Every structure is written in C-alpha cells, then in structure tokens.
Length: 70
Image (tube, rainbow, N blue to C red):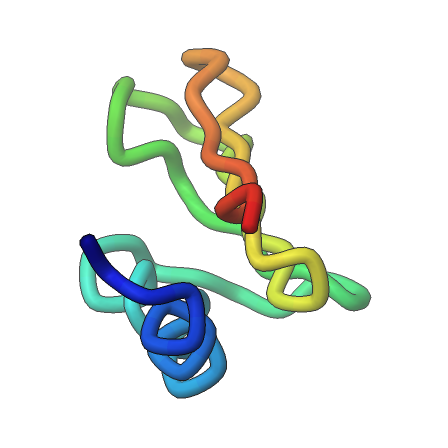
C-alpha cells in the first residue's frame, strides 16, 4: 500500500498542465488551459485542464478525471 504522504508529495511535485501538455497542445484561457481532444477528431478545442483543481475534462467525449479522493 502507498502511504497518503507519498501520494501527497507526488501530487504536489506534479504539474497537470505539464504532464498533459506532453500529449495535447494546450493554450491558456483565463485560469484554465484548452486544447483539441485527444480522444476524438475535432476542429475547435473542447478539452479543458484546470491546474487549480487538478482535473481535466473533455467535453466532446465526456471523459475526465477528478483529483484523487484522499
């Protein structure tokens, strides 16, 4: 089992924008970042990353990830 303190250190050291930015071209829009969906072929950005909340949501496919519930 991984200790909560270890998970917390990893989450603090990891930048969600940097990690997702390795796979999706993101542009800053207000407090969030947007880009084209990596799950479907589209012309307008529907993929949103919120660094403050540590989540992403793809509105075209409905996929997303919430922060870990620890």
